[in-house]
Image (cartoon, rainbow, N blue to C red; front, side, top):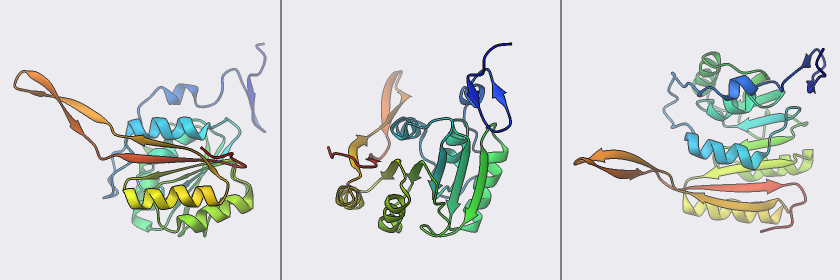
Amino acid sequence: MKPCLWYNKHNCFQTAPGLSSRMSQVTLPHDAKAGPTKPEVRAVTLDKLGLRPTDHFVDVGSCTGSVTIEAARRVERVTAVERKPDRLDVTRKNLAANDYDADVTLREAEAPDGLPADADAMFVGGSRNFEAVLDHAVETGVDRIVMNVSRVEPAGDAIEAFRERDLLSAVVQMQVSHGYELAGATSFRSNNPVYVVVGRRDAEGL
């Protein structure tokens, strides 16, 4: 028998859970009337989170569930917190349309309410109550936290809040363009910029 490459409390795996699931695209058949985190931005966000198979990951403001689904293909446990019941229902329905391996808990709450005390990594998808969310992350020892912001002024506030709490590790500004055909040639249509603010426990700054 081949040796175990990854364990959980019940099973021995020859490959890490989620490897096959990661190869498939995220399907989002249900609309939350608030755009999902774009695939390219998700890719950078997940890279900066550095998720590990044994992590407990928290998605703050799950909305369509796009980040929840991606994380659930990489880690052991996911908690998705969403304050709007209709959006949480969209998260639930989109999860059901995808393959993943994690134990996923959905919580209807306005963060920092509803946030677990044992998270390893956290994604903050918006600026609502974000300073209280960061305080919770510091108090409970969250190791890695990433916040995505699409407006300049809240991005500046987020960077300063991360810095004040000794979390600031990196800031990435992303602007993605997609090609389309125009008069027999290729032109590009740009999305709005996104600021990816990256935090680490006991970070040394930029």
